[in-house]
Image 1: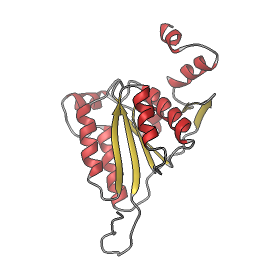
Image 2 (image 1 turned 45 degrees about the vertical axis):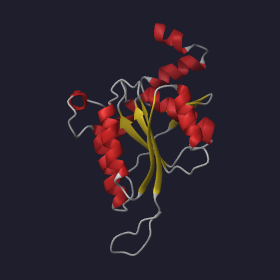
Image 3 (image 1 turned 60 degrees about the vertical axis):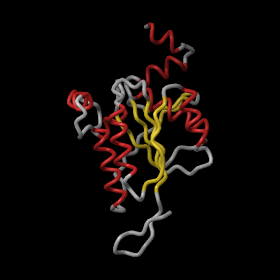
Length: 195
């Protein structure tokens, strides 16, 4: 169903989304995910699902479920590692990325979201622990709904995607770039974590 824009009589398309949260992300909060789900599902212009995954197989299963669906917006709940994993798997399964990649910062390291001023701070961590509104991820959801519901363009920034032998990441992510390079030159994840 495509909702009618109030007072205009013009129909706008519904934006299809898939938001994936990593349960193992360093600052993951189920309470926060539930609040984000409530906020986003209230919009008549957004249609999709918020999913929490814990393993690579769960992530791949989720992406395969949407393999033949046009996703306009891919939300990533985690840090640099989650972003790399989700983008790599999405490219592998979907063969292309959606037009909009929306970060929901809840990882240990979130350098790739710094361009948006969304890096997790101590204030954010306290708000999550105390179940207080206003975390950066909740603000992101509120911005998304407000902007889409008002039929305004989303504020975007171009981020160059790093691709090393199919592993995706962002060029200025201080944590992810060394790990990708480590893997590229033949090291394993276990060896990386030992150093």
